[in-house]
Amino acid sequence: MIEFQYFEGCPNAKTSLDNLMDVKSELKLDDDEIQIIQVPDMESAEKLNFQGSPTILIHGIDIYTGSKPIGNNYSCRVYTFNGIQTGIIPKEFIKDKIEKYR
Image (tube, rainbow, N blue to C red; front, side, top):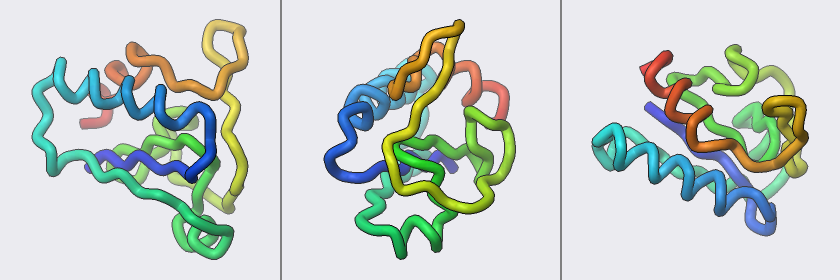
């Protein structure tokens, strides 16, 4: 199961979700393999151990950290890829992690 977690208003969520959906098409994943979860408030973030928007989990493992989330963070998430900070999860990174953890 792949979970895409985000909150409304995060400027990077749409592009990251688009990247995930492109990978879904490329890998021919079934619709039921991806769950899109909107995290509306801090209470929900605490229940989910939400790491920030956007976050992608595969079988409960955060694809960026490679571990199960601990604690929570209700803010826009910042990643570093190839030495560059961004809030967008790149398509190739998503694809590599899905192929690894799936």
